[in-house]
Length: 320
Image (tube, rainbow, N blue to C red; front, top):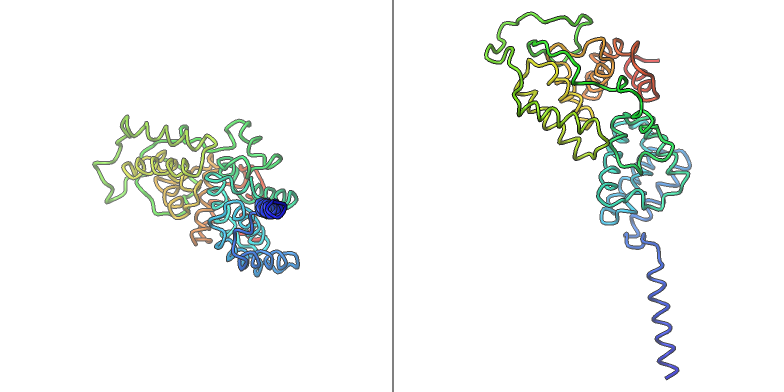
């Protein structure tokens, strides 16, 4: 009897030990080692090697949201240190997705100091509007204060509803000239579309898109906003308002080529729209047209609220 009780005690202790073990044991040790090696590479300043290790480690943690959240956070920091802005933004998008679906970032065992550092970098490198639409956990408690920006007057954010709707023919996706008057007719413009305005159903789509862009929504809602806005923009290429709304929506989900295309249509943003000019400049730069990005950025900067994010692009596009 005593022997049976002893066996039961041993089994109970084993079960409790397994239950108390870190969840990381569910991940193959190969990927655990990669995460460790990446952390060591990061600590010694070899950020490119660290990013490579973290990227491979994250692949082995796809079924473990909390471990994946920590791995992605470390990957983002390594990409930031390595100067990989595109990689940082892509990893941010993955963090948004895993947090929305599984709370993988907020429930991860990421050390507080590492979490605070990542949230500071996201506040500096991710557009305020995009960050404001991300889960609260990614914005942190002190963050950018996308919440603080959201309480400011809307003058520091695009206002599609107030933009000019003067009909103008579609333009090639390049920066608009400084003068933003009514555009003369162009040979080959579609006469059946000229001057037509969106119907009631299309205006409802635009209203829905504006609401999704204005609110702190999810990545899925931002994609919905773009889909709604682009349907109206494609049906009314002469509508400056429709093109700009679609361009802003595309920018918010980092669809750079689409954003550059829509924002440059129908005359492009005016000098009284510095945010949209900046969006156009960033979208041109990120889609490979660094030379074309300079002109709209120069027009935007005098009237644009300066942030670390804006200054970083100004340096990359215009130079020191």
